[in-house]
Image 1 (cartoon, helix red, strand yellow):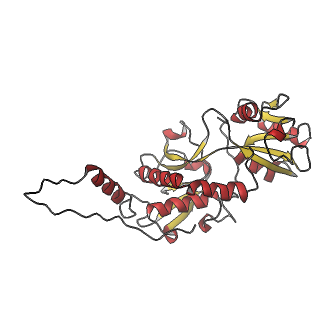
Image 2: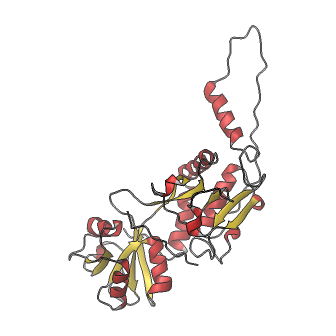
Image 3: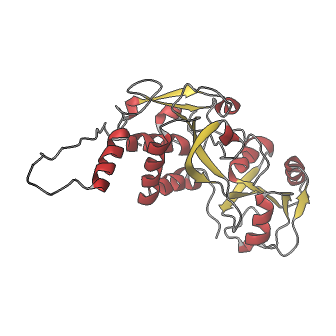
Amino acid sequence: MEAEMRRPHLPLAVGALTLAAAACAPASDTSTTTASPAGSAAASASASCSPASLPLVTPGKLTVGTDKPAYEPWFKDDDPSNGQGFESAVAYAVAQKLGFGKDQVSWTVVPFDSSFAPGPKQFDFDINQVSITPERAKAVDFSQGYYTVKQGVVALEGSKAAGATSLAELKDVKIGVQAATTALEAVQQVIKPTNDPSVFNQQVDAVNALKNKQIDAIVVDLPTAFYVTAAQVKGSKIVGQFSAASGSPEEFGLLFQKGSKLVTCVDKALGELKSSGELAGIESQWLTAAAGAPELK
């Protein structure tokens, strides 16, 4: 896992309200037919996850928190309510699964560090690139992961590494990476460079080495790569992204007040979005194509 850090952010239509309904079979003194326990449980779960049944901060509204400014590619035009950008699209997709229309979703500003601080929350869930960690889970609850963090390759425009379109083309590139990170493991296990990577104690040292052209590229987690190219290294670009081969992946989760009864329903919604392929489609749209971070194979 990466060392804990705050990654500064960079700059769907939803369905109509659906309410679960249940019908009761008439009782009969002579009938031996009984209701299916599984069916009854499913009907009960559906009813308990309807908007009217959910314990919301504001009845009838799904209140979603995130930081401001809300940067790309997680949001677009610093406007979480427009449904554009990866996390905005995910929030509205979850809302739709819960039965909320777009006009029933309300956004509120929540500073990153405040989101996982102990105490009551003024949101139903927060979506803000918050990594699921055991330490944070002591103070708040998390959904299942909605995004598994991938690794990003950053290089200077016009450099040897900048034009790479595959992992094989990075084997002879001089790569810099921070010590004791999942990025280092990914370089060693996935890229398998011809020469050992340059390992730095601090990420800023790797970034400075790239600025000074001491190395051809750096490998960092993708959210950090967006920040490096936007704010730290002028004239740099994201060459692409790839998945780590082993280890426990870092995941972002929707964040809730500790003990929230919404978690089960939101996990169900996320499970449906995953199984249908919709969540993967949102990721492809906003974190690959639109963000200029192609998958490296």
